[in-house]
Length: 67
Figure 1 (tube, rainbow, N blue to C red):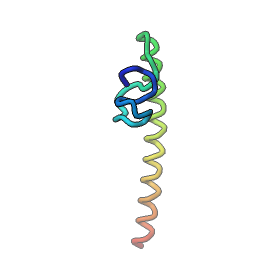
Figure 2: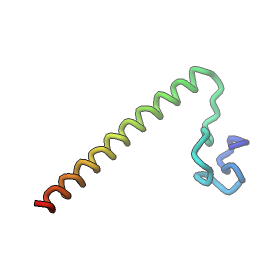
Figure 3: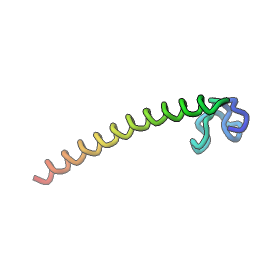
Figure 4: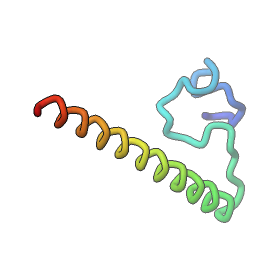
């Protein structure tokens, strides 16, 4: 997001880009960037666990259907 103003890469609004930047989170210091990245890491780990649980559940259903 070129202007860090929430308008997206082409001025079409948030969530219209590729998800490659910080959107409206201007990071002024290395400490702020580090904290932002740590928080994003925690969120992604939670999302990964949820995806893995969903996959396990689907695999259980598949195995029950085959029996």
